Structure formats: C-alpha cells, structure tokens
Image (tube, rainbow, N blue to C red):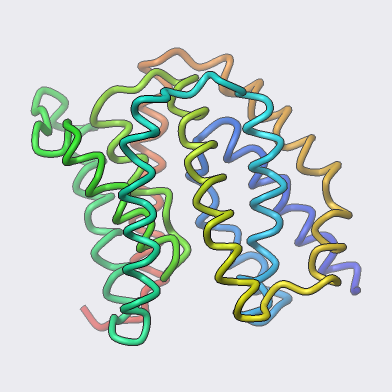
Length: 247
C-alpha cells in the first residue's frame, strides 16, 4: 500500500475516533470523501464500515452503560425499519436528492437553534419524533452514509446531556453498523484483506478516542449543544456541496 494511502487511512481513523467520542459521530460524514482521495467509491465505502466498527467498540467500551437505555430502545426499531426500507428502495431513490433534503433539514435546524433559540421544536420532541428521526438516520446511513445528522438533530432538540448524547449515539451506531455489516458481507464487499487493513489502524482509533474524551469532558452542556449546532450547519452545507444536483 502506498504511503499516501496509509496516511489518509490514519487520518480518517483518528477523525472517526475523535468524532465518536466527542461529537457523537458528527464528523464521520467527512471520512468517506477523504478515503476517496486514494480509493474508489466502492472501496472507500467498504473500508469505512470495519473502521467504524472498530471505533464503535472502543467508544462503547469508553462510555459503557452511560447511554439512555429507554431512549435507545425507542430509537432502534426506527433505525432497523430505516435500513430495511433503504435496501428495498435503493434502486428507486435519487441519493443526491435525499442528501440535499437531509442537508436542508440540518441547515434549517441549526439556524433555528443559533438564531431563534426561544422557538421549541415540539414536533420532533417526542417518541414519534424519535422513531421518525432514527428511521431517517437508518435510511440516510444506508444510502448516502450520512446517518449522523438526523440523530444529532433529535438529540439536540430534546437537549440531551453531553455524556448521554455521545454514549447513546455510540451504542446506536454500533448496533446499526452491525446490521449493515450483514448486508455488506452478503454483497461480498468485506474481504480478509480489508479486515486486516482496518485492524492495523486500531492504535490510531485509541488515540482518536482519547482525544475525543478529553474534548467532551471539557465542554459543558450549553457549549456542547452550541458546538453541535454549528457542526450541523457545516455538515448541511458540506452535504449540499457533495450532492450532484442542479438547484
């Protein structure tokens, strides 16, 4: 493997580790485009999953039992429905338009929280909102590898505390990635070489997790939610730029 490819994978693993431990996976959207600098789209997507699962294991262990269990039980059914739905409609839906819709929701929500803080989003601040946003997360994660934003929007809307925010997102995505792994294996995308490559970067995942925990521990709830809102704004514009559509 070329040294440039090794460096890019190392950066991606570090980014994933920090993202999952500090920002509930919000920065993961940037990982696949980085991998695509040296790998084809299919190779990047295939490599991304075992890298994510390794980071999931480390993050879940670091935040073990700190998640909101009742909330998690509300989210999982929606996510599974979303993943199944995505697999059923994968040949029918335009991924770029779906990405554009998700990006628009991110931008509107972020602006609302940054500029119009007094307005409450009661529409999604309930169990139905949890189900709908987790289903959208499952769909967007499967189709456009952007499962984070819908979940981050919901967690921000209910004002989840930083530790539970990160821990619940960690276990949620860990479960969802294991479900996705079944599909990847059935499609022949996961090879022994791919797994060995991912395993070789475990030390970088630990470094990323350590940095992420340090960041998370030094942010109070209000600052954390402010950071998440600005991240959603950046993610929204990033997803729009990536979406190959005419506006």
